[in-house]
Amino acid sequence: MPQPDPQTALYTTAQVRALDRAAIAGGIPGIELMERAARAALDVLRRRWSQARTLCVLCGPGNNGGDGFLLAALARAAGLQAQVIATTPMSSGDAGLARERFLREGGALASLQDLPDADVYVDALFGSGLNRAPAGDAACLIQALNGQTRPVLAIDVPSGLDSDTGLAFDPCVRATATVCFVGWKRGLFTARGADQCGERTLSTLDIPTDVYAGENPDAVLLTPQALPPRPRDSHKGRYGHVLAIGGDLGAGGAIQMCGEAAARIGAGLVSIATREANVGPILTARPELMPHGVHVPRNLEALLARADVLAIGPGLGRDEWGRGLWQAALDADRPTVLDADGLNLLADQPRELPAISVLTPHPGEAARLLATEIAAIQADRFAAARALAQKYRAVAVLKGAGSLIADAQGRVAVCPWGNPGMASGGMGDVLTGVIAGLLAQGLPAWDAACLGVGLHARAGDLAARAGERGLLATDLFPYLRALVNGRG
Image (cartoon, rainbow, N blue to C red; front, top):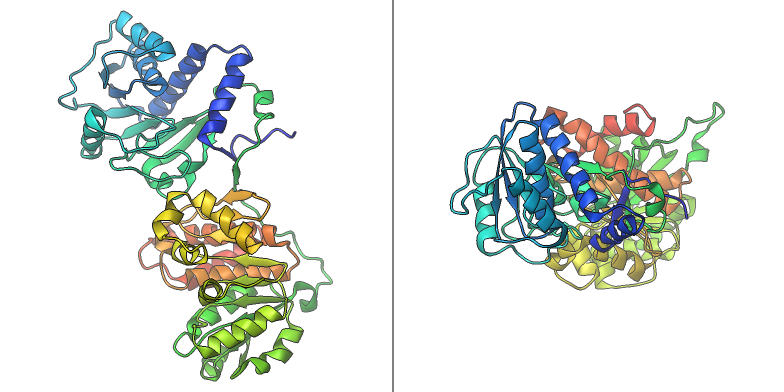
């Protein structure tokens, strides 16, 4: 079994605990791992807040609290002032040894009643594995922590964050930075994970690499990728013909953006099947595209015959016109990217999809496709993405903070890029065109979805350098062109 790259491997909480046990079984005492964790956390703290002189460490009853006690002891030894607030009068196991060391070396416990003033606060209350909302004294401390303005370093996982799903319980620590140990917990990268974690750092605690070889990651993080340079004798026929289908009355912009995205990412030819009223405006705005007015499904036949890849759904609508084009297009059995009303129609009328298909739902569309509620999708995005891929035997892109790509074999990749400015109309239409354009250039569905999601999110981040608010979908186009050519 190949050894995973720790910087891109994502694990469940149970898997990280198995890695912990394997490391201990291999000869590293648990208290030694705890000491390494404390040193790693202190290194992050001093590097990020080099002027800090006073710390307040909030320690819970378990090993996460033990990490906190040792961090406080190490900080005191380094000349910093470190106060500890403990939520329980006792700790057990290795955490108990850590607590004893802190007290033995002159440390004292502060009152639970008030959060003392400090340059940096350290959250060592719960860590990973919490599957319920914090309560009692811990909840009060979290609320006080979130109510002040000084920086917060979370140890392993912000307390109150489900480390498997990214679901944030109420209350949940909103950290300025998080130092994660042994392996990345997958929930730190999707749903509320990024908001609650702040800047993320991983320390493997110098665990031997052969320990990781025995545990397959549950998912992987995307890494920056581009397409290779084209040969000098290239011609447009080599890079595929995308047919984008959609743009009902009043929604012509959606299908235009989809078509332009496919062209900007490198498709050789892009045709658009849309309402007749959209043809003139599309030609005026982007003459490189080939729009066709389509009145009834039979008008699609010649266009489908020439197409290599279909992008179905942006602005399509769900009335008789849209439904008829949707049915005819799927019957053509071409490689397909399905979005927007293309997905809503599929939820209304489940059917077999082409063998090469990519679905790109947001959580609302995913809920309809799986006949559930949005809250259920967001409560476990990994399970939802896998369920979509398996139910429809397709590659599924579950959009949102930390977009997920899943296939029917259970693989999952997570996008670490993107920003809130991308929560604006047309972004999904652009993503549909990007993935379709990559399929047209010969990429397999999994690769096209992963590369497309990554390029789209990275382009959004570059475009947002001028500010997130007011970011438009078409602002991504120059950056998409640069990134796909390896120039971003």
